[in-house]
Image 1 (cartoon, rainbow, N blue to C red):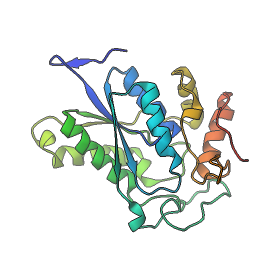
Image 2 (image 1 turned 90 degrees about the horizontal axis):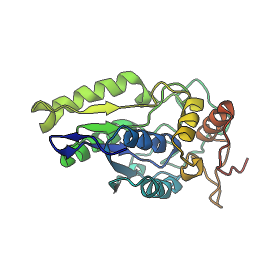
Image 3 (image 1 turned 135 degrees about the vertical axis):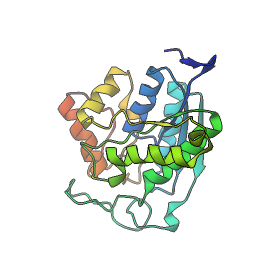
Length: 232
C-alpha cells in the first residue's frame, strides 16, 4: 500500500523491530496502514543475539524505509536471564514475572523510539507488545502504553508544541494464535523472525523457553505451520 501523506509528505512511523515474530507482524501492519516505516533495533547485550540478524533480514524483506540499530548494553545492570548469567527457565509459563524480564526494557525502548520519531518528524510509533498470551511483563500492559504516550507528550518539543505522539500497539489484545493468523494473512514467513531466548550452540531455537512455548502454542492453536526449526 502506498504511504499516506500529510501536507504533501509521506506519513512516517517508527517501529521497534527486535527481530521477533510480534515485531515483524507489527512492522507489516504499519506498512499495511500506509506508513513509511522506519525500524529501530536495539542491541542491548541480549543473549539471543540471533534476533538482531533476523531484524536486519525482516527490514530488507519488507522493504522498510530505513533501519537503525543502536547499542545500549544493559548487561551493565544485569538483573535478567537475558542480560546476566542466570539460567533461562524451561519449566513453562507461570503466574509470576519471570527472570527473563529485563528491568524497564520497554520504557527505555519507547523513549528511544520517541527520540527517533521526533528526529524524523514522525508522530507515530509502533510496538509489538501483547497482554494476553505473554510472560507477564509489566511493561506490556495497556495502562503502561497509555501512560507512556502522555509522558511523551509532556517531555518532547513535538508534544508541547501540539504534535503529540500516537503509540500503536496493534497486537495488544491478540492471542498468540491471532498473531500467527496475522502472520499468515500478511504473507510473512515465520522463519524470518526469531523468538527463542536460549538458542543452542548450533543456532537452533531451544523449543523450551517461555518465548518458544508461547510461539509454538500460538501456531498450533491457529493450525498454521511454524517454519522455524526447534531443538525440542
